[in-house]
Image (cartoon, rainbow, N blue to C red; front, side, top):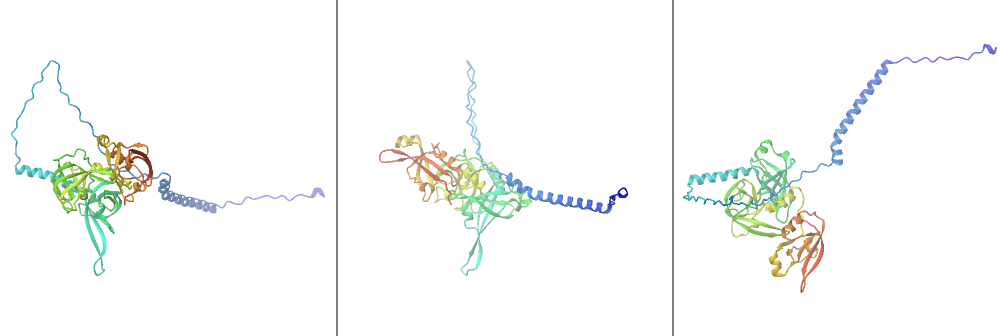
Length: 422
């Protein structure tokens, strides 16, 4: 009976393949892959700029206004040979020719053509203020000045003007040579010189305007001499896009401001007491910025301009959206002659210390002679000015100086925290 017993044997039958459902699953998989891929691609595109900005921040272009290097004049030596006598130079006496009216007019036409070309980088700056009349009715009060286009960063046009032009403005508007008007905003200003840099978004400027405006060339004022022909552009007579021609009458005037000394050029051009704009040479390059507050002869209305070469350091800082470092000392150089005559140490003489300035807070006094800043020797006012421009606001610097006591000079040291003049 045991031999008759058998285990039940099962045979598993494979389930038949459902081709329709398999195709449906494949289709769903492909569709989900496409969706996930699209989402991933979109996410990558949207986040890529932020990721790159976070890990590789884009550096803003730095604006620089450099002075051309001055090469010494080559020494001219006569080309002579041994045992040979040089022939005497021929002297030609020419009868002086007078300029007739037609020739004089032609010269004037050429001068004014330079001025009209310069008009491309001149803008009018409108200061819009919100005021109320005697009946307490609000209205807009507008003041107009001039400005100079000094740079194009791609994103912004930078415009140099005076802070007093936009003082207390509720809004600022800039009008170009073709009369297009756009909004502008203050980027930075220097409380010492009173100059300011505005910026205008380039996307707000029309294509026609782009073709008609230009960026000014900041030239050099190192070789400016008396009698040199110059032009005043901007608003020299108080009217925008007015042009004056004339000559340099003096190039040796100097104005001492806090932390810097500036050369002021005077001219024989009669302008407005509120004149603004720039002084340009016959090549159309800016050699001075018209700041009538720096005019040495305030009782006269002849135009005066500050040397552009000496302003470039301040303009460069403002153009790169950096504040101008401020210590608050009016200084001059202790020359070899002064040092020997008055038995003073060589360095930079402190003529005045401004009230509530970082220098006053550090204990500086009139009569001190600065000899070192952060261990760097300071032999002249130019050394002091260049080093101060490289400082950062809130930076603490170490100054070594000499102070006169009852009998002699004693050496002192002080730490100064760099500030900003508002």
